[in-house]
Image (cartoon, rainbow, N blue to C red; front, side, top):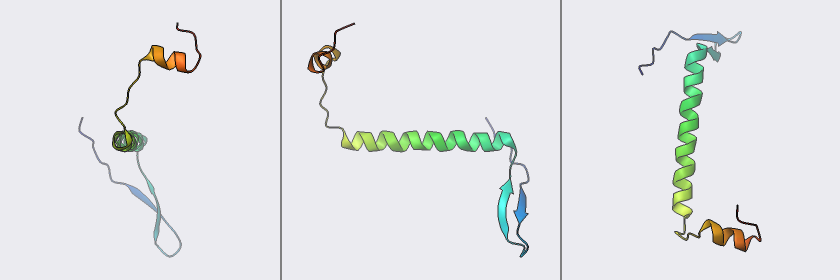
Length: 70
């Protein structure tokens, strides 16, 4: 999907410095989605580095936690 970038509007302070930007809502939502995806990737990479490789079955986990199966 190609993102169409529109001309952004800027809010300036009395000195003429840009202090905020106005973007179309669809562009803002797309940026949020992309940031969330990047955060997911970062968390995955972080988890993968700290993964010991140890695995247990769900039934062993349930026994260890004194939970009934099903």
